Amino acid sequence: MLEAEVHEILDAARLPTDVRIEPVRREASARHYLRLRFLNPDSSFKTLILCSGLERPYRDQDHFVEIARFLQAHEIPVPRVVAVAEELGAILLSDGGIEDLSGALREARETDQPVRFKRLLQRAIDQIQKMQKLAPPAAVGRRLFDSEKLNSEMEFLFSNLNACCVGLGARPPITFEFSIFVQELCETLGRSGPFVFTHRDYHGRNILLRGDPETPDLTIIDFQDARMGLPWYDLASLLYDPYSRITHADRQEALEYFLERASPQLKKQRGYFYAVAMQRLLKALGTYIHQVFVREHHAYLDSIPPTLERLEEVIQLAHFPDSAYLLVSTLRGSLIPALRHWVERKEEARLSHI
Image (cartoon, rainbow, N blue to C red; front, side, top):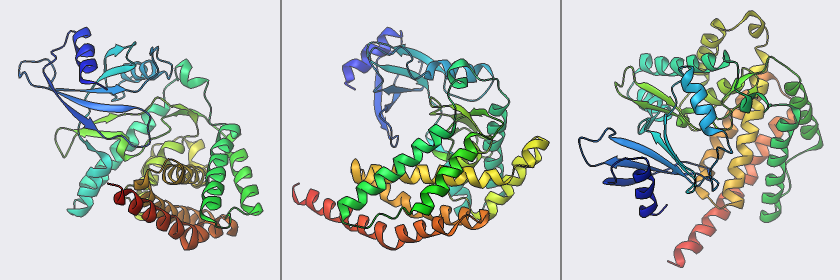
């Protein structure tokens, strides 16, 4: 976004235009984010976040504003919508902070602060269960994690894996047995219940922290794709986040914490946690391969090995079929090394033209 457009947005919102503009990196998103740091110490805001790249004119087509105001009204910590620039396709938001939960957990782990690590993770889980008790707004209530949606995400994985294999001259790793397993998995999850308010992308980088390091204020972001899903979905997203430093032992302890506060019905459905985690990790794998091979965002290559590690853990814990383990083994042993070699050649070619 041009600096003149930033000033136009601030002026229309009756805010000072004397700001320092800082880019904020947000991954795998068509949206662009800027941190606006107000230089006048008397300004009513120290910083704001400008989200741009939205459809023009922006009429809340993605229901971000509707969902933000709904969550805020129910005391879920989300950014406050300060202003909407419809013609420029942008939103001004309150700033949730620079640090995110993934970074805070990593720091707590590296500096041997187990109590802080546990407390931060539990606070994130508390917010999941608080959102799950809400009667959803219309925009969320009509969007479901049904079998069709879950299967479409698996088709995305399969198509990107096949495209990658064709491009690299490798043998496609998806077996008939695995495709049947995934289809049955999605069908089972899609007809299960109960369905609750689900953030859909609830991981550590979408939970910002600000304030006292011991008891920071949380701000949940990127909730515009919220839909009705199983109560396990956001928990699996959080605990099996490939970017996190959450261990198997941490996951087991966090799962028990979640179940202690869950309904009796949910406590009987513990196995669904791993089924949801399996689907979620496969969906993430498809996204990473698409980002690396199709869009050539090569930084996502480093996200694939930890995703495979977590998939392997889920397969073992849930006793999923050998076809699932075979997929992970094939990706780790041949396809990912070939993809890494392809990325290295691409990077060498790029540098040679600088």
